Image (cartoon, rainbow, N blue to C red; front, side, top):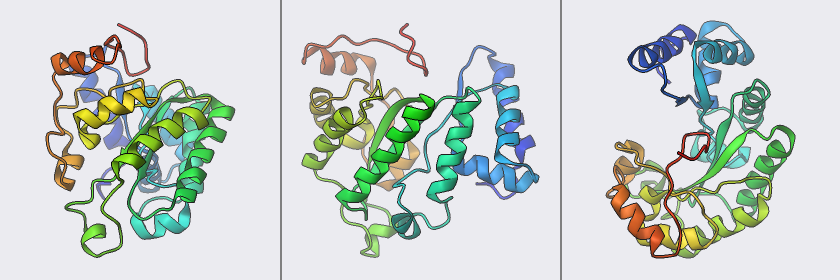
Length: 249
């Protein structure tokens, strides 16, 4: 949320990437950044999305969602956009043919009821737009966060809760094809168990997951495909490479 970034900045970023490789699918920008670009550029969020798509944006990040319950957001992310604004921008993107991921960050301050409300919002959007490519459940990494140090957030989700989040998401989000397992937040053994609990996507080779690493996660940067193969073959699965939009390679 750089204070000097306008829509021109974001479009320039896309242009510079495509100058290096026009074939690259650009999955970028959260609803928070769309709202920020609109505010800084005196444009509507729709106008921002139109310009980003014309510049070459391939898909939108469904991040900045955290927990889509405003009473929780006021505590854990008071400077981010509210629930209604997040939903509105995601729907606008989907309507314009810009797909997105969906996320939930659980294990900080929210209750089980809040998690269910969040998943219900995602399912309702998906019924309407069919624009979500996958759910990415993000287990809260508490170690180095101010929320935890101040005693506001708890020490993240337990392993039981991580497995439940994957399993319940698979059952409840009956209109989602893909439930991602974020190995950088869960660890390799728990990730393997999560694949058995309803996950079908083993995140990816992120190379630099600074957010998780800075929050206290270890080994969050890179997972060798050789190790991926070992994890999935052990449970009778076949490792397959995919594109951002789930086309198998």
